[in-house]
Amino acid sequence: MQPSITPVILCGGSGTRLWPRSRATKPKPFLPLLGSATLFEATIARAAPEHGFAAPIVVTGAAHVDHVEAQLGTMPEASIIVEPVARNTAAAIALAAFRLPDDAIMLVCPSDHHIADPAAFRAAANRAAALAAEGFLVSFGIEAKSPETGFGYLERGEPIAHDGFRVARFVEKPDRARAEAFVAGGRHAWNGGIFAFRVGTFLAELMAHRPAIHAAARAAVAAGQADGRRFHPGAAEFDGFKPESVDYAVMENTGQAAMVPVDMGWSDIGSWDALHAALPHDAEGNSVQGEAELVDCHNVLVSSDGPRVSVIGLQDVIVVVDGNEVLVTSRTGTQLVGKLKGASQQ
Image (cartoon, rainbow, N blue to C red; front, side):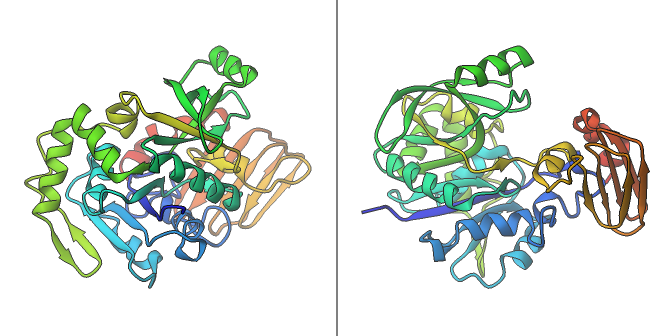
């Protein structure tokens, strides 16, 4: 029997690389960047109870909880854990784990990714859950279709059940030459930060490798208070440890790391260039959101929330208008947007 899967949606960050559209007061997950649904709404929808999943747990901060409430709607049994302070993903996942029974299967998902093929996502989630029920800590290994240097990679090891593989090695963000070799070799996949764990297995591995995070999360949940569907862990108890991602804290240390390969039209929408790649294009590679006219342009994105934008004779350029802020950058410059003073002062 397929175990029940509880989506754990991690909802934090400021999304500064998508400034000026994404701001601290309303960051990337809560924006309709692709179509009418926000990235958060799409994340909830593809792992909804109507598809056989348990009600989700959303882990977020106090600054974003009103957005979560508004976009979560009236989904029955959904719950929200309000982190006292952001302490990276290992601690956030631990808070959710201590709110679930040991035999539950957690499907950990970022709230701000785009997945074009939800059916492929759900098929991979079921395979990952089956492996998690057998004691593996499972990553989604997203097919590496281009030599990206901004992603971590998973090296495929020996095959195991449910069309999965052991993880032979976790690889940090490579340089261009290594990334090209990874894609050509076919043994490496992107690590997109989507995981499946049995709660008891995850907590045992966390205790073995990062006991301070385990102890703080357990104490914070024990001291927490419920407020409707919101749960507030104890702030004083959620302290005394070094914040770390779940990759560093657990996945790179466990002997039970596994992966399920998946091709699901995934993008982390980590920059304006990544958004451009995920949007529909015309024959010249141009994408337009809002009112714009492009003449003799190639691979240009224009995104305007009001003023009409006219662009002539440019290629590989991004133009964004949001309120009284205007961003113009080359596609290669989009990774530097977060360094702008306007983005850091949003």
